Length: 422
Image (tube, rainbow, N blue to C red; front, top):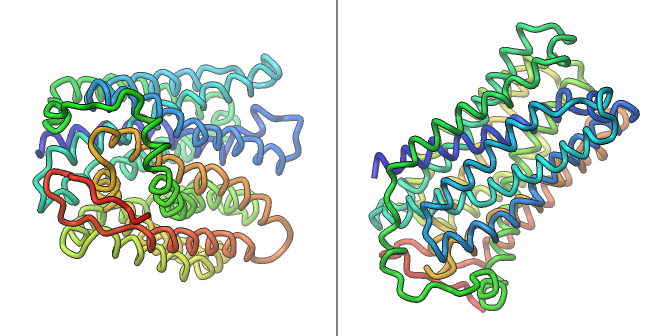
C-alpha cells in the first residue's frame, strides 16, 4: 500500500504541477504577452478565460479516460493521462507570443490548455481508484488521501519555481523567457512519473469484475445523474476557495494592492504547505467519524470565513493575508481529504471510474473555471471587494445543501456502493 500510495501521490503531484503552473503564469504574465491589445484588466480576464478552458476539458477527459478505466483497467489511465498532460505543458512553454505570430498565439495557448485539462480529467479517477480499491476498509480514507496530497506538492513545486525565477530575474527577463522554464521542466517530471508508475499492478476489484459497462457514461447519465449533480455541486466550493486563494488573490494582490509577486507567492505557498500536511489528518478523521460530516463541516467553515478572508487580503499585510489564506484552505481540505474515499464508495464498480471522475471534475467547472473570472470582474472599483466574498459564500451554501442530500458511506467493505436516496 505504501509503494502504491507513493506512486499515486507522485503522479498526481506531477499532473497538478502542470495544471497549476499555467494558473500562476496566467495571473502574472500571460495577459500582456498573449493579449497585448487588451487593457490590463481585459488581458487578465482573457488569460483567466484560457485558464478556465482547462476546467471545461476536465469532464470530457473524465468521460474519455473513465471509459478506458471502466473497460480496460485503472492502470492504463495513469500512463495515458500523464503523457498527454506532460506533452501539452511542455508545448505551452514553446508557444511564441502575440508579437511574434499574432492571433495564432492565444489560439495555440487555448488548444494546449484544453489538452492539459483533458489529461488531468483522467488522472484523478485512475490514481484515486487504484489506491482506494487496494486499501483495507478501515483505512481507506487515509490511503486514498495520498493522491490528494499530490495537488499541494504540485502547487508548491510550480510556484516554488516561479518564486525563484521571479526573485532572481528582472521583469524583462521573466517576461522574455523566465516564465517558460517551469513549463519545460514538466517534460522531466513526466518522464519521472512514468517510471514510477511502470511497476504498479491493476486494481483487484477491476480484475474480479465480470460485467464491465459497455458504455459507462451512458449508464452514469441514465442511472446516476442525480448523484453526479449532487457531488459536483458539493465539490464546487472546494474548487472556488482554492482558486480564489491561489489564482485570483495572486493577481489581485499584485495588480490592485501593489504587493510584490514574491511576497504574494510566499504567502500562498506557505498556506498550501500547511494544507497539504493536514490532508492525512483530515482523512483519518473521515475514517473515524465518516465522510459526509467532514464535508458538511468544511462547507460551513468556508461559508463563515469568506468575508474575514477578503478583509484580511485587503490589508496587504503578509501575515494577515497568510492567516486568511490558511483558514480558507483548511476548510477546503476538510472536504477534499475524504473525497477520494467518498466518491468511489458512492458509485458501483462497473461505472466507478467514469462516475466518480465526472462528478469530481464537473465540480471543477462550477467552482474553479468561473471563480477567477467572476472574482476579477466583481472586484473592480475602490474599496474592499466584498462582492467576491458574497460570491464565494453563496457557492459554499450551495455545496452545503448538496452534501446534506448525499448519504454517508463509511464503513463500506470492498467498496460496494451505498446509493444516494432518490
